[in-house]
Image (cartoon, rainbow, N blue to C red; front, side, top):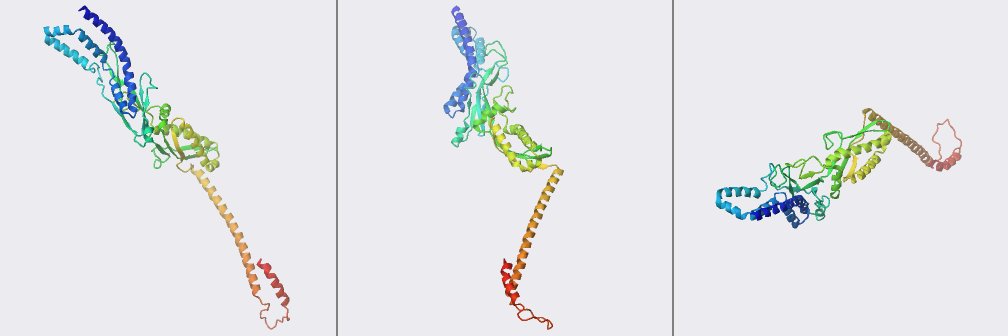
Length: 416
């Protein structure tokens, strides 16, 4: 009997050390082996499946119970012989207690298997929550699938660990335990973004007014819409997540403090808030430094400059801006637009009048040429004879001979 007591004390002492080491290592094992699932490998899945079993279900205390049972096997058998029914009930209670590792928790006692689907338009990172969280984490290599023209999609299991909420330190003899993820999946959805930020709900991609309201150097108001497109590259997913953080969206049944899946802020949300405001600021600076006439004549140069700056700035934080351009005409106050229209009409009328003057000069020159040409043709056909005159007019003989010779000499000069 003394030997059994001594052995039991030694085993309990060793079990305390074993229990501490095992408790500390379980989340490391389950969390970091789960990353192997992201590999394009069957072996990786098998390793992660084994690691998921290290979830704090009380393996050390089961081992302890087995050793104690062996040490006290003979006395236990004697008890069965003396009072079989009572011993059987007690043994059954102990067996149920140690055999079902989930009964000790007061709520959420079952470690339910949890799977998450990584979709084709998502980049995912599985991050262990303890230990080597940087070197231990892994990313689903969507780019490798793309390079081989394959669909990048995978279902992975989220490993869990037991989080004690109180008790005397002996696992299996505590209350208020709960399972939490030992690795968390961070997801970046790469859905492209295309918008028309306009005033009219009928033309833009949102029902609210998203137009840009600016003023020129003379404080003349102008507004217009902008068209923009953007996306997140696979290799920029971690950068995007770092700068813009996570959303409030969580999966159904996830705990707010210990979620299994964490989603990055949507690209649409970031574009509508952060990028829209930056474009507004840059356009305001450009229009505010120019007179209205320069704003109108240099509007293409202004937008090209803003687009270049926006593309460069947001490429550094994980967003690829594809284009930024006008989505509508420049709009002014009614009085300003009326004045602009009058100036334009006046310019067109002046241009028309100038063209008419040029046309009149040309027509006068043509008429002069035609007159001279007609005179020349008439002289070239004249035979030098005077038309029949009344009888009372007497013309001396050879009177027209000198004039005939003179006219013939003048014809070439007239035709020039």
